[in-house]
Amino acid sequence: MIDRENYFIKILKPELNIAKIAGAPFTGRFHNENTKNQKRKFKKGITPTIAIAASNRTCSFPVQLLNIKTNEINIFPSIRKAAVYLNCHHSSLQKALKNKNIYKKTYKITKISKI
Image (cartoon, rainbow, N blue to C red; front, side, top):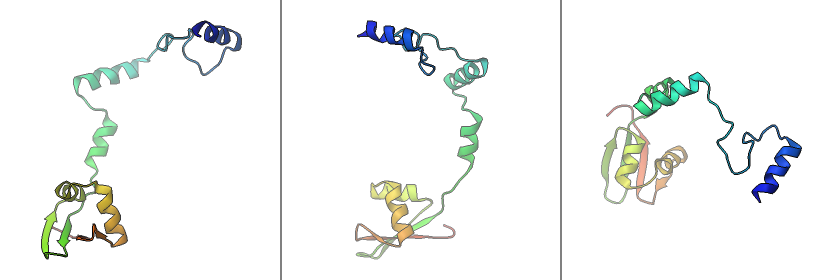
């Protein structure tokens, strides 16, 4: 099978096939110095500046969970923390908040200004 693939690589000379030999996916690949430096920093635990900039942005806001069956109120600094409390995914709570729905027929979630 590899012989046949080599045959077609030699005949067709595809532009997108980086590997010049079938079965050797990493031959023929080279990284420029910038990529090498980024890989070195990543291995040392230094994150790229894009990741740092993304982590500085915060979109979290405090939320209030009201248990409509027991009238218990819980306040959380973010939807993610509330999701951990309810053992669910944060997107489920975001959807309930956006659509003003009751989550699992028990919890009403509302956005609050401050804790």
